[in-house]
Length: 125
Image (cartoon, rainbow, N blue to C red; front, side, top):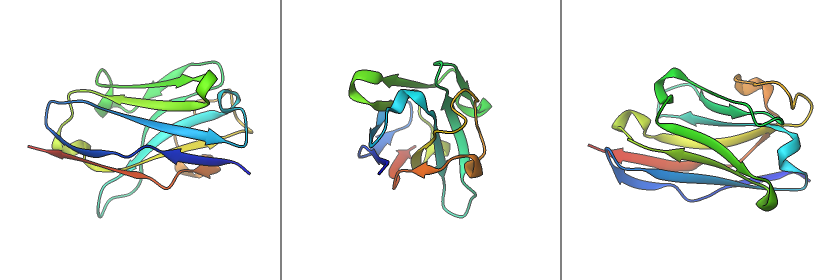
């Protein structure tokens, strides 16, 4: 059974950084398309970043140059390095994966099959 587990988020001041991780079990993580999403209170779930099975990446415009999605295949883990955080980055963050469309750079929540439970990131001003 495929399981995804995000690391604990946290409370950080604006301008600081935070790294999230997503540990996968039950499959070879690097062979899937994987993504990070976030959802702020009262808002729809928003795509943040995606990495495909070839290691190509894509980001939503609001995080380009600040966030980096990466992987550690040996640890079967996905990361999201978040720099220069702002209060607008405050949200519940989720990792997700799709094994069937691994070479695509998926961005819609409905395209992902497996989801973690989410981790809260709060950025104070």
